[in-house]
Image: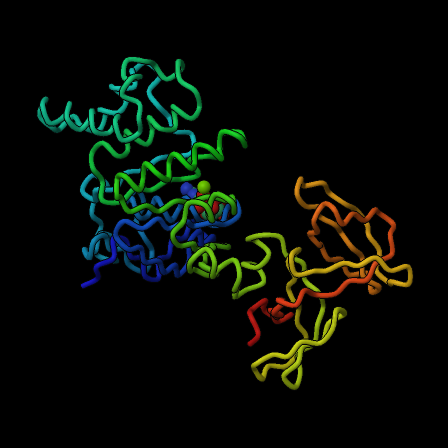
Length: 351
Ligand code: ADP
Ligand code: MG
């Protein structure tokens, strides 16, 4: 029997012709935060609704703590799954106080246990002092914490978070997600967090799954999915990436920025990924590359550079090595650069 807190095997959900989720495999360890990140419409909310039991599945299986809750012949109702959920529009009851909102899911408990859980949940999110306020008397971040306390109060085994930061502005969001992460760690709850935002995904997740068109493109630690993308989509979706046309043959991949040895025996047309920190730029009047633009980023500048072929790469350089648009430069790859090569035909990593 699986000891995973959440496990999905071949999870599939269709709406008419559209497969919203197709063959999704996920496994989340107890106490772990899994970030599922993908563009709008990629199947994130559907995946959470299936795990929560709000929707029936068309194929595959979902287990929670080793027990099958969704299968072809099984559908455990949402209220028996011990799953909490926080939606994007955290939908607090406007005419209920903070305390009443948080106690909302505790109506089945006796009075003393109910007030104990309420007290614990408010302490966890550090809002004890605001118990009697109404939602409109709270900041966006405080409202977010109330929604979290409401979901945590019934002591769920798994908490599902659907884009909980997307209504917050950038400053607040960076602060709130830090608070939320530490609250979740204190609660020790298993979390599936979905977002379209790569920064939120990398910040929150112990592990990341990248979803695209209802399928998981790749999953792994934040470092793995960022530094070792297995598909062109994964490479382009997390972090800034540029792709240079290339050709793989005889253990070498040839690009406009040079030839790189490869360990495999693939062959064919492909694209090689570069990230801005892979690219070195030197001033050179005879240089055949040209600076198109510079974006000030504080301690560094981000340059867009056009290579002789017309291909474009981005380079990040320290602010004290300044170039200007129009400058002729020479572009090379940094000594640490390791080429990652994606087949032109299907976008898969070529080894
Ligand atoms: P995300 O949360 O990643 O933006 P969703 O899971 O909401 O994506 O949607 C995935 C796909 O399924 C989309 O193409 C969406 O239009 C479709 N979809 C979602 N819910 C329904 C529904 N109830 N009826 C029909 N199509 C749906
Ligand atoms: Mg969604």
